[in-house]
Length: 382
Ligand code: FES
Ligand SMILES: [Fe+2]
Image (cartoon, rainbow, N blue to C red; front, top):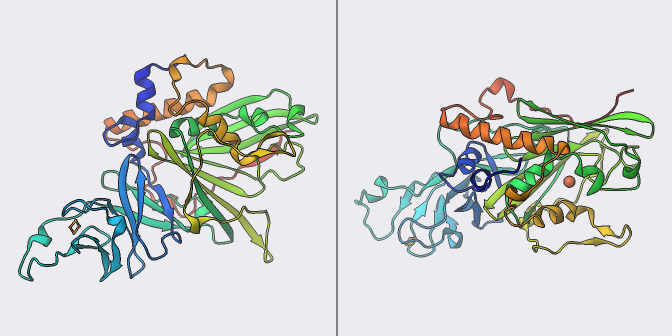
């Protein structure tokens, strides 16, 4: 049941006008961290489009098309001043909405600036992450997922580049079988073959992976959230079902296409704080550094285990599938149920857009968006 070349293109091409590109544009996407700008604008590339991200003197964030509408100089070299972002070349001044505030030298009576606009996109901040919306109006709500919206704990976040197409990265999230093999640890060889049971739910795919570990039946429950997110966590060190992809804090990961051949992997960890102490260990927060670079084919090694280092295991598996995995040559089996279901919900989402409907997981009801709680867990079944 390999895909045809046309189906593979449909799922992997992210630019404007492409089926998956249009689907991805129906959701808010991370574009950076609130504390990474440090007084300067930054060039960003997202879904094949070049933009500039900046924070004005009033603390408002803006995302504008990268090239100045006057004569095309990159706004990443602009100055934050006079209530907006001023192009370095001839001083045109833009506000966060793309309104042209000044066209120096055109005379005070000129109305030209009132008749043109720099293309702009909506931005919102939640939990220290900046989200942009590149799709058609009306924009949906920015989903208030627990790791971003909760106030009763601590967060740590970072972002890094993975040098391949986003779709093979999100297939990893619904592929429970890889936990036992790619993230093998001391206890995983004792896991008996289990049952993988992905189900569609309101926001994406609810993954349940049941297996026998140490003579007991366990269910590992986590979430894939449309369009590129997963939510895992809550398996403590020393737990009988421990594997090297687990963590005791709750984690959300977004895979945001830069273009068809590279992706930014955003990770946000959350641990609630009880009596002044975080209940789980968080990674080092690296938000202020912005996006970390990585090199295709180069992975860290863990001498202690004699195996790929934990933080590069998924990247090694995903990048070595090829920059854009050619699914015409694959051989799917029963443990790939989740992958098959993910491709189906993408195809259904593309179809929904053609029919004028929202795809799965788009949030528009404020009553359902106070806090979107997704609770990953490891449950003993008997
Ligand atoms: S190119 Fe930006 S002001 Fe001229
Ligand atoms: Fe993994």
